[in-house]
Length: 240
Image (cartoon, rainbow, N blue to C red; front, side, top):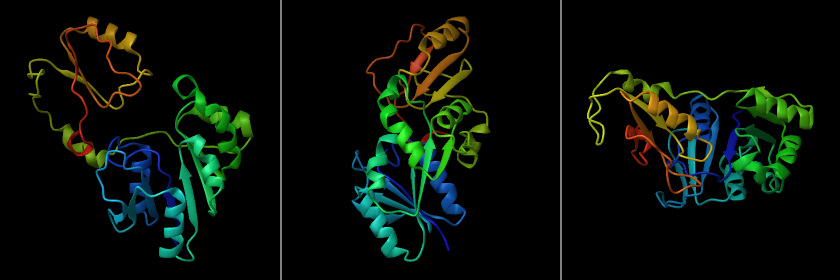
């Protein structure tokens, strides 16, 4: 018996390749059937279900209820598991019958995510299994529920990035290979500590600082040193 794991529409599959995509890829390799509901905001995929590998299915422009129905029809007699990271989804998930509910706590419900707080407790209380990326999250959820929480910190897709260990000169404007590069890949968002980053850049003038990723919740960058560069968004396959 193989579990079918369904992740509800939250982020596009190939826009920001994050923890949910990474975990489902690995679980599919381990034999689980994984369905990633792709909101398809950027219209990169045809609507419907498509196998990315033997056990990994992309459901583009498919609602969570539709993905669960498809899973039950395509894989009868297999347990269907809902895995989610966005607490406000809890109401939607409760309305659809699944065999197990896994809540993965990936961010604190504060500051930019403060609007999560009303549904955060409910998500943790309703979940059968709770994961957390950090000890502070584990402690927060335990204080809300008293439940067992499994600490599962973030990691790196080593097989994808190992080619980057081959040292080479970076010749991508405005970088010309004359200085070492300190790089950041990910969302360029208000939760970055720009004050600290600007101090680092000022005290390390012989290094170039390069930032790659989409801007979230902001439309400008508070860079104060000429050795700081924003290179925009780069597709996941090209990052190494």
